[in-house]
Length: 283
Image (cartoon, rainbow, N blue to C red; front, side, top):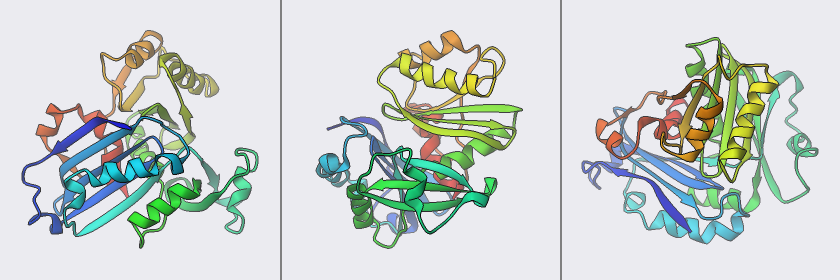
């Protein structure tokens, strides 16, 4: 069902310490991840599992996801708080001037086939917009079962806020967050959002196509504008080598946020692999 991507747990994280910590969780359609953070903002655990069937109907993978979470000793610790977030590809950004609370499904009529979805929205104040989500009912029920007192929130908002911080350093920014066969692409001009979208991919050529498409759409030159990579991608991987063959400068994005990641975690994976988890601190 799943494979290890991240499994780093500080030996200081015990049942005695857990009540003073918060567990931050992302339940996605391609993977699940969580970070345990103490009151000083130090990350004491970072765990991620990729699903064998990314983007499959959630009812089909739900029992496996439940078993995966329950098999982790960290999951059963008595944390003081648990904060939950969703991830899936069915989102759209709507400017405030065009936004109507009354019929959220209207924003997906040209994007999705009719199905059983739970609709929600989140304000993104930095760009005076709303992120509207269409969550599979099975995933929505699973999320509410885990976090009964938490309104549905999508992890993309945190990623966008982290990308905005990254964009403060240059004229144009292209951030590519590689998940498990799913990629999120964010394009910004200074700190103004130009583009956000999510694509499924099966190989390096697919990923290259979507990244170059973003360059082309905004008339950015792959010879002049670097791409910033985050998530599940390594320097020796085929994904990285394919991008590097067509884009002059490929950089790894350091996590933004208020949390500190122990240097010991870098012995497991480079810091850019924790970009999405640490971006949750932007909330």
